[in-house]
Length: 300
Image (cartoon, rainbow, N blue to C red; front, top):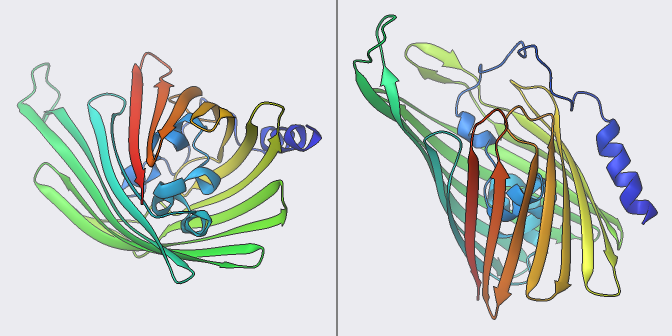
């Protein structure tokens, strides 16, 4: 229990995780903002702590976590997001000859955006935005360390304008004790892109995370904490509690620290045979509504 309390205190004490009423100086300056949206219902339910809880979606969060997979997996998911946005993804994670690797893709679509050329109560019409990324990742286990690298191609189209780019991720997980995992990740490292004759940098991101696990009289529980910083936002954090009273059931709860759009989350994980179904409930702040996220996976 003292390990869990220390982990929670560490994340809550980190500076910059409280929301601020003042806009961040670099807000909105990076391209491909969809890369900052977490992927998969499990990560969403656990406060966005993807550096340690990505599972089969680790190609999107921390490629080093692929080394912890016990079997090859195929995962797919779809969810609505705030407003008219929706996200879909597929990922395959495989183990072969001591190397774990993954191929993955995702698409985020936003439709029904009103188009105006000047201040007017009536729009000229509507348009949409489509953003997609294709990922390839690999990881190896070296003693107490898991090391992973990933590369991705991105494309964005907003009405008539579009741009493309590429980037790299690198991650490490260190296991100093059986009950503790520590993670560090850098994401979206790549050259700037040009759209509408303007140059935009990528949403460079770093993540630091820790997870402690404990066996209980009925099942097992883990507490995860993560701090993340995007180049165009203030530092943010997340906490996630995952409790499995039975092998087929996981009950999850999370908190997003420093988020301007949502705070508390929850969800469930169900499994039968080789199949898993994860669900996350994400209520939005400031009357943004609520989102429901589903992920279906199969081991083979």
